[in-house]
Length: 418
Image 1 (tube, helix red, strand yellow):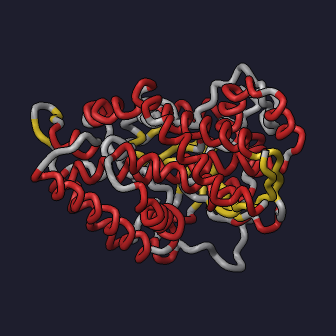
Image 2 (tube, one colour):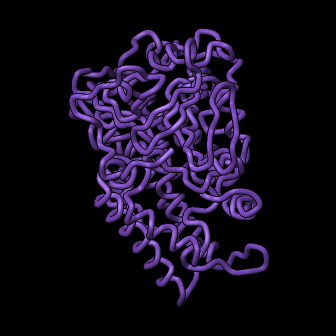
């Protein structure tokens, strides 16, 4: 399969999808708003779809296929995890950098055996014990955010709350000023949202992030601190200190992967409760539901898809994949598979059998899953404790982003104080 020039990969105006089995479009506005009908259709007639849009890709829709493909590393390589391919000039730059310095965003962009030592390097930052140390900061942050809008009777649950928590928590963990969180949000959205279809924005924001972290490394050369950047500067992998390029790459990954994904999950949960009165009332009445409710919301609104690159000829069912082709790891669709989940297209807050793969599966399962769960738990608990009742005030004004990470970006909400 020959890749199309990413500069010619914009959504084809006036050329809507005619058959999702052979021409799916992950950037289609209706698909971004609600992809579940497409997944249901494909599971019945073509469980692994194909497209030539956005550089071409395969799209599995069943739990078993997604699981098996995720475990097929390195035949399905993680070295190119982006769903939308980079512009040619960025791709050429990345290839040159990787040849000189190694993986750009370890461990997410590396395969075994390189992957393991880098993942072990960051896992201690997100162990259950470490994550609990960040809970008081997160609780104070959530309360401070609500203080800003509670008296007005209205809020944008995405902009004013969900999007504010992960960047400040990640900043706190990494060791940078949480007051700069608005910059981080702008950069991350420039990479993962606007940058998907705007190569110039993607390159510019990538440069902002990398330059920022290089400056943070340079600041610490005269004196290390008690933070993640300093820890990485003294860490070793296979007996060697990490290069600045690698440290920047790890920090870049923590920032990008730890912000957009989690705020999407928090925002989707608040949108759900703001749109679903019965579930909202149930959470007020049954606070013991939080553990199962959070897992169910993660399953139902799984925000992330990743890409794999085929390195060797391989077949999954009728899909015969050739080297160079791309596979979209469709974790959200897997989590709606009726072969695994009863009532898959309903949110069941007390669902007890819930082996979802919202955080992925296999060696590349998300290292920050404990942190994401903690942030989501705090965000929802504090919201329900501080706010007496709420509802989406204008459903037509809600806006969703999609592609690599799907989640609501505008959620106007009417709120009353508890």
